[in-house]
Length: 302
Ligand SMILES: NC(=O)c1ccc[n+]([C@@H]2O[C@H](COP(=O)([O-])OP(=O)(O)OC[C@H]3O[C@@H](n4cnc5c(N)ncnc54)[C@H](OP(=O)(O)O)[C@@H]3O)[C@@H](O)[C@H]2O)c1
Image 1 (cartoon, rainbow, N blue to C red):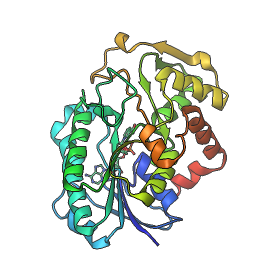
Image 2 (cartoon, protein in one colour):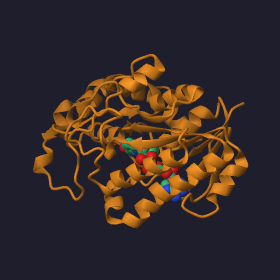
Image 3 (cartoon, rainbow, N blue to C red):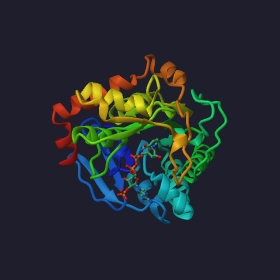
């Protein structure tokens, strides 16, 4: 059975990948501060910024490493540059060294936030220009990974889904507001290509069979505004759309600058997979189906 190691096992993406991988592979998972358990997976705590973390990973001798761990809070990263660098860049350097020494295929998860959002429909060849500390550290992590492990791949994405821990992805936050019949704002001029973590997880498993190298954009096959995303959630979950208030990014004073168009072009991924990527509404429909099937309880209870 293939031995795979997943970092960020307590996070949104990592926890969903671990859950799905546990029934198919020999799975090792790393979390940092938030202890998690998943049946069938060997999970342990390790701070990837520390010296010696590379040694611990090497001992496992994984064939594939999926590096999801990161400091993802935009505001926190902006105010804590050194910490953002440590968790996003230094940790990635340690992972890259471990992958190199273990001879593992490394898949590094990155973000649409490496772009400035002036153009949209970003392809892999487009020049990144991050406007936040988070984006800058993620871009630096990509460079470290690809320099140290040229046979690895960097998957840039934009994600949502069900969290294992008590925190909310954008879709969960919107859904909660709508279900509680509370008003919520939706940006009419911010574009993105969000993919549900369960679809991304399935795609990661397909991709590591052929071990593609370099940067690949894996996101929804189409894009929408954050306002339309909220409308789609209301439609698909049967909730009141009138609670959604269209707003413009220009009207709101945010502490951290936000890019307007971070939509990703997924043609390369489509070619590698031999099929189009799921659309935004297909992803939200899957999110609804997962809840109806009891997935959320299964995810949270390990
Ligand atoms: N969320 C998004 O909207 C989004 C969009 C695009 C790309 N991405 C990328 O997708 C990946 C996964 O994001 P996510 O939203 O799933 O993240 P998340 O929910 O914020 O979880 C982050 C994970 O990283 C772990 N971690 C952080 N620092 C660590 C360290 N020093 N050592 C070991 N583990 C550490 C955390 O562990 P503890 O919780 O146990 O401390 C947690 O498991 C990231 O690379 C992110 O940049 C995310």
